[in-house]
Structures are given as C-alpha cells and as structure tokens.
Length: 112
Image (cartoon, helix red, strand yellow):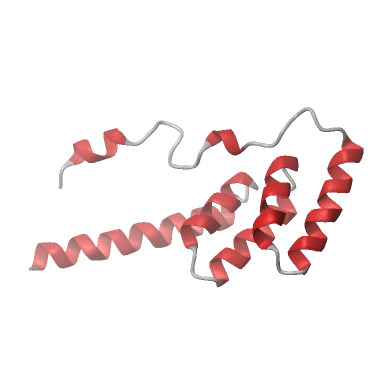
C-alpha cells in the first residue's frame, strides 16, 4: 500500500473546522434558537435543525442529528455530527468500523 496517500489529508482530519459554533451569540439567543431547532427536528426538518445546532454548538441536538443520519445510512455525516458534539465514544466507534471495512477491502484485494 502507498503510505504517501495519507499525507494528503489535512492535519485536522476530514471534518471542517469552520463548522464550529458562533461565539458572538448570547445565552438567551442560543436557548431560543435551540428551542426552535428542537421543534424543527421533532417535526422532521433535520437539515434546518442541524444548521441551528451547528450555529449554537448544541451538542445534544448534534448527537440526535447524528443518530438520525446513522439510522438513515449516512455514517460519514453522522461522524461529523458526533465530532462536532465532542462525542468521542460514538465517533471513535464509527472510525473503528470504517477502519475495519477498509482493512477488509485491502485484505480482499491482496487475496485477488
């Protein structure tokens, strides 16, 4: 395997760091936005809720969005939400599953 391949990845990884929450939002504004995001999420508008939760940095909301992505077969998007929510347990689990899948693919290529 070509080890140089991994040198092309950014140091911070593949999750965009610009998705960090805004710091200039007051606590009252965050609470109001999070309530709106929760209502939207519960109504099924996951994408608008996600944008609100990313803006406010509401980790519980981000984890719920991640779970919905995972249930919908979007593990990469779920990983991003878990990373932004600082949910190391869930993000490490997804990374481990991805590594196992890659290892299996590489083993099959070697056997072929």
